[in-house]
Image (cartoon, rainbow, N blue to C red; front, side):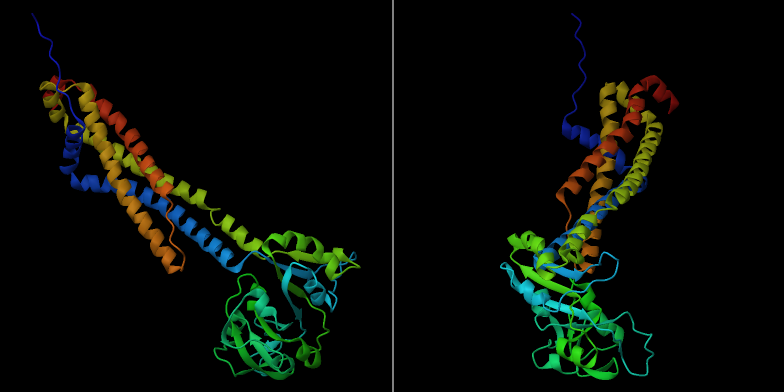
Length: 397
């Protein structure tokens, strides 16, 4: 009775060992092929990670600064002219029930210069504004150096500089004097950053009384800042125009500064798709490199293929051997790329003082992309190797 020959089975460990053997014999070629995969994966993870880190930083900033602040400013009349807020607008805003604090600034028609020898036209983009004493509390800002305006200094020729204004004027300490209007003002404080009110950063702030007495300020606020309970923000927003200017509420503009930060957080990933596309192109090029390496490997190892087939290896076993080799090659590049991408994200985020964020799904996606590339790149070489006839392969070698 004739017994049918049954080919030997290859277990998972055998498949990995046979697949890895082909990689160990060609380290330089394996390194260069895996490098293309690594660059593509690293680019994709770094793009996602840096974008996520930037967005997380903005969201944390929003949580810290709060989203319960509204600003009120003068709009335009029906004839297109700039309107004015009433002089008692701040007091009216404070009467709204949910409002916890309110403050104002008013534009002063004067320039600030480091000395009186600098031409008036050279302003450095710094505005002079009158400010109420509760402005810093409302903005929840901080004084980097010196002190904020108080009941005494708001009536004296004292000025507090925003962080940007101080840098542009070259002021790095308090006690120095700057030229505002036609007289000297003493710098009593320098503010820290104001993310929700960047206009304050570029301003020289003086008290309302001294601005009216010595700089010709008319007393009308230009911008009102108010904070209320978080759950009442929209309700307060709805009544602010009629409260500030009952006669002409349509001439009042109300905005929420935190919306700008929220928009930046949403736009942080605006270019992510474009950069991911570039990473995908690099990954595709790496996949072509893997396929080319596997095709050359099949041509160079025809004797090995013929010998294995002669010893009883089936076409399926030869096919799985080369497919496994391709997957291992791609996985090597994928792991290296994931590590490089994560390190690049952490390094860049820390350099920008951001919280480093590498989303787990980006790593999972990188692994999935690597397996797909490895499968597609190795499929044709594996099928080509499996189709080789043992006698032809041995004769060709």
